[in-house]
Image (cartoon, rainbow, N blue to C red):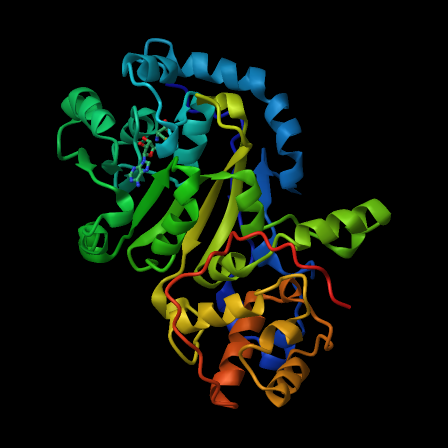
Length: 406
Ligand SMILES: C[S@@+](CC[C@H](N)C(=O)[O-])C[C@H]1O[C@@H](n2cnc3c(N)ncnc32)[C@H](O)[C@@H]1O
């Protein structure tokens, strides 16, 4: 099989939160999400050695450009290599269930890029959520890794057992028929599985869009278990977790300023959560016709490298309290931070907190760094002894139509 990928996109985020944790607190409080040095929010795409900032808004154009190349790649890959992705889907004779987010990947270049981005080798153990008809599973198994696949749909789990399951056997492919969101073995299944725990497992999955955020919330804190998570995401949601570089140079005219403001407004509590637990990277756009049946929205592959627990920034309280606090800061994200904080802190604490941030008293929640939220939280907890509830969950995707305040 050819080892050439048409896109050959190898992306990486440049900065690490480790380095930011050594920055002095006053410097940290002055940082701003739009700062071009804020590499947590920059996606770098490497293509034939050339790096360029990639804009999510260019996805459509980029996907179109590479279509013929993708087809050629798929043909080369499957010359004499068994079933093509389309054949695997049609062979399953399965009527896609939309309520389970069933959009099967039929574009081979996307499968290759997902596996390559996670750098899967025969040493790896991979968790695949929702293997469906097994196209991504087959691509993973080609590397010689072990796959543990959790599928909710009984028919698909059965078909997979009768096809790839028979071909590879339990040692290489374990098929678990379960709702991933209720799967109790997640916390124990991967512990100490590779090299007595020295090496961590990885997750590669084309997951249903209606549970992407919940899956991410469950897996991001598992940095001691998983070293890499590669997912298919709805592009609009991916944009909230990270956006393109927005340095001063880009703001050359009014249009650019407008764009900048738009991307900025995508930032929300879930983005802070993602940056707290991981380093994210954009891998590639995925057009609608890469799926059967095609979804209504544009998609992309996105990756997260979860941090080990010892590398997380220190917070004075529980993680649940921290994210409840962050959520309250974004309660109405177009309002000023000071107005959102009113439900949590007294007026004096708010004034002091804004002074510490050094971003003026009109700062809005989407204009701060993840590190600023850690600093704010630690300040109100340590210096002002503010009580913060532990709320079970928050709806980060809620679209708030609140008006701007000035
Ligand atoms: C977008 S399809 C992807 C299928 C396959 N991985 C592919 O790329 O062609 C999502 C898959 O997740 C499965 N699924 C949906 N909800 C699930 C859940 N809660 N737990 C496990 N699997 C689920 C669906 O049945 C479906 O097979």
